[in-house]
Image (cartoon, rainbow, N blue to C red; front, side, top):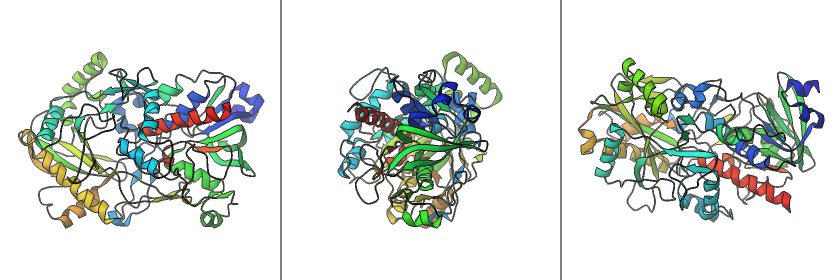
Amino acid sequence: MGILAKLGISPRAVINQAYDYVIVGGGSAGCVLANRLSTDASVSVLLIEAGKKDSSPLIRLPFGWMLIAYHKKFSWMHKTKASPAIDERRMDWPRGKVLGGSSATNGMIYIRGQAQDYEDWLALGNEGWGWRDCLPYFKKSEDYYCGANDAHGAGGLLHVSKSHGDELGDTFLQGCEEAGLSRSEDFNGGDQEGAGYYDVTIKNGVRQSTAETFLKAAHNRPNLTIVTETMANRVLFEGDAAVGVNISRDGITLDVSARREVLLCGGAINTPQLLQLSGVGPRALLRQHSIPVVKELAGVGENLQDHLGVMVAREITKPITLAAQMKPHRMIYNLYLYLRYKRGIINTPSAYVGAFFRSRTELQRPDMQLHFTPASGYREDNGKSVLDEKAGATTVVTPCRPESRGSVRICSTDPEQHPEIDANYMATDKDRKDMLQAIRKQRELFASPAMAAITGVEIRPGDEFQSDDDLLAYIRQFCVTNYHPVGTCKMGNDPMAVVDTHLRVHGLRRLRVIDASIMPTLISGNTNATTIMIAERGADFIQQSQAK
């Protein structure tokens, strides 16, 4: 009892020392599962989160993402290994280490991807994962600001609103239309092409993380136990069945039993790490670390994908940028706007204007995503933000469906030691060509009549960068992650697949992976909405299996 009490588990749970469901990871997916599974009062649910509670006001304030995403108090502080194609750079990969996970630290942009993304999953053999299959689960979560329609839901726990427009955003959108991009009022109906204001997970000036929404609605249920600052060390097995999880906090270690299922929701980095530490993964890697093989699955930790972006920044000659808004007298006004109307820069997501376009006319659907921000600067690989002296605006364009694949592999048997993350960026000729196209399109948009009327010099990369070789040199030095790692426990039925279409780990019983790692391929855009959808589907699969 003393050990459990020190771990922060409730007295009721101390008596049992076992739960029907043990969920590892209180992030974007884990909070959804905790809510949905605990609606059944007859089952007990334990949610284990390595990070702290989401009590910081910086999490709630939309503008706070700039201060928390790279802060060790809120982030796992992962770092990639050196990537040859980007000048051997090691890039910081912030992932949320707090209740709500990356939904508590991300840029709050709500994007589902294109309908064809899910048809691609279906074509890979993932029956039941086409667009029509997934759309009801997007809608189930959603409380759309315009109410329910064919594409959106109302009354769900996750509020989705529209970014507020301003003069600079409106001008950029006018420039997009002048450059041939139609205006899009909704990126989330399955067809993304065009430019417009992003949907965001913000309600009345407050970030809508899955902890703020799903977990907050369920945390007082007597059958749900939430444990923070607690590390999952390995999954426990009896034969081919997962029977619990070994956890620790402050040097105290404990085995927690799962009567029905163990559910892994640690994300594309932590979930394959935990599986490998538990004896599930590539045989050679497990033997290298003297870990007994419970189940050989070659795909655990492979198939890593991320969106890589390249930025263009241009001076804005009118006082309508973020730099102008952050002057002392304007900050006072912005504080008033936020407190009175929930508007202004304090209520600003990471990017409020976006676009999806085709890099080549012969393509059947958009292959590029653009984020527009009213500031000019960049973030160094160590996470430090650097603002340019000139006031400006920045666009970042990301190829939506990169070819390059990386991996996540343990470096030791110590759960506290970060795994080796090989992003393997720009490893193919197509990916490099796509990045060049991304720069050219950004320059085209800034050269539109509407934007040319308010812009000055190109701050980044600069007019001296014109040839492909020069631009590739710039890309290698300044490309940035869009924070969308997926795919390391992919769903499918091929030799590299890790889970089946019901998210059960191949060859093992009572163990599922329910997070972004199961995506076979990247969707076209930000990944958080899709991760939440995956959790909604996972909860349904579990409840349906128990009802049989």
